Length: 353
Image 1 (cartoon, one colour):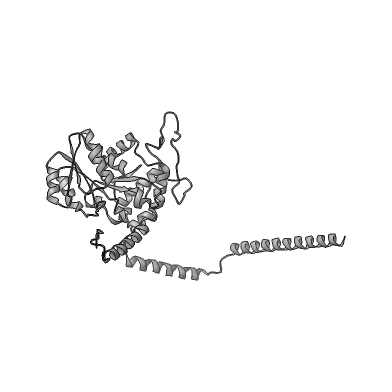
Image 2 (image 1 turned 120 degrees about the horizontal axis):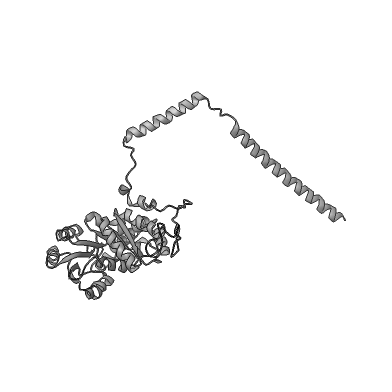
């Protein structure tokens, strides 16, 4: 009996304690409300004084830099573009990270009206996010995301017709070499390989046939030869030929092929764009709306697009690309410097050593 009474007393004490705590919190909230509803103790003169100081500070800032016009996003540095990717796609919830639209089809407004998206092969909001971000990074008119770097390059060859010539290097990625040597000639396209460091040989190859496309890498894979992109672009354009530069080794953080005169810049999303070894993809960025329309036609017609989830992963990777590239460059330079001084190493291929 005494145990029961003791238990009851303890329960009452606990309830009383909780009740007291609730009442204390209520009083604190009431005090806070009262304080917020009371007029400010700051006098009008004090407010004017603080306002004047703020205006003086604003004028001081303005005098230091009278041009307060917002910077054109095209002039942003790479790190800023990566942190604030440009996109016309709007999320109704304002998500800070682009949503994943993992869908094949989209509902339409009605049986006689079309919405902005209908079928993911033709367009998807997540892919639009990635493509617009890449166009901004490359200062391009349009960009396109493909299922692999090779599907992107295959699309580039679709811009060439039977009876025309592609001029390319003699030190190129194995997959590109296979495509140009064993696949493209089947449709009647001539492919000429040349040492891209020999500019006179390049000029002769361009002028020696019906050249409509020059495809090159710089630095090359695997020998890391640095090619004079601008000089070769000038040669090609004299012949009215297009130029595509495989920029996978450098990516947009370290090199801008379009600024050097190229018409198309190709970057493998598999490597530095996604950056986590979990995506296979390729990206094309181009100058000119008409060229963009031609590329999109083949991408859509042949189903070469990158899937929504892979696009989302690539978008995630873009956010850290500048930091990753800087660190990888530092590590590569340290490793190459160490190897160059090693008695068993005869030569280092890293540009800059």
